[in-house]
Length: 431
Image 1: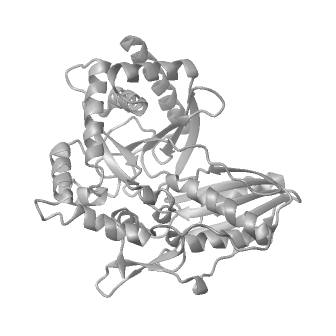
Image 2: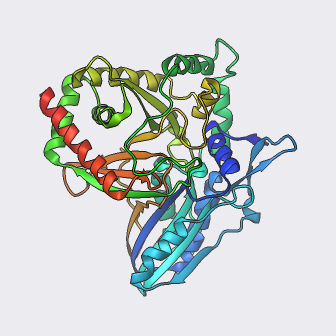
Image 3: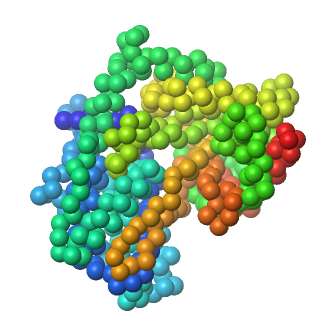
């Protein structure tokens, strides 16, 4: 039996600790306009689930309570495309219901598919994957393989694809071989954990921000989401500052976020979480699976630094983090052993994400198709700021996910607006 990857262990622990919930669902919508062959679509989806073992994996515990991956054989796979007729006015409610599905990861595969038909030639395919089997970088392989499979099935054929070089279980074994034993001073894992122990020693455990309500003792993970923009002129300023300082665009945004959090009452020792793709081998690029790790950016705002000084600190920390990106976050929490509370996320409560994935194109014969990630009414953290290129212009599209147990929507809007003002000001001052 194959043990869980480090990333899977983190989500399995939360699943067992909190129970099944929609908090870690990653829903994807595929809008389909045209003559849809529903039977071909269901067969194609099954082809994709068969191709990627992560999508047909359940998690079982042995007598000692240790979880393992069990890949459901193709012959035993119970996968159905559920179809529902809906009026255009009811689509949003149907999507919300679908994305709120709570997976039982020990008994069912981590993917659900629902086809909403609002008109004879208008459909919305809602795919709901649990994060334990899917991440943002999985969008590309998913779209590509679904396109190939649907095209073949429409012609009455089975899809012909090159066999995947590796599966997720191979990655799990490779990961442990590469990192070695954390008790071995010569191992990569020992060295990386040592770096993070030193980096995060004594870090502030809770970031106190102006909330509209007291923090509940146990979070319900209810969330809201809003979008905002950084216009093309401001983004050009960010990019110019990044070039001048040898930083990257996300480093500038992270530094601006750290300044904002400090201004909001977060103090001089600010910790921000960030996801890192974790696909360090070309063979992993074609896989659907969960490879993301989490690292912590600890920013020192003491001494009334200039923004250039803050940015230089962020740049140094970010580069060091990339060199130590494989140390599993959940193991780091265990080693650092911060004051544990169910009320807030350990080591950080604000997340920053840079969405640099290329546009995902889906080509289905006879259909105009577009694929996008959906949001759900959940929040994993107090605040999560995500940024990516604005497809409608040369700026950035920002998304702020916020915990509604703490913040009203108006407060979250204020945070987003203030971020843009801080970004504009620091870029102007550094020019």
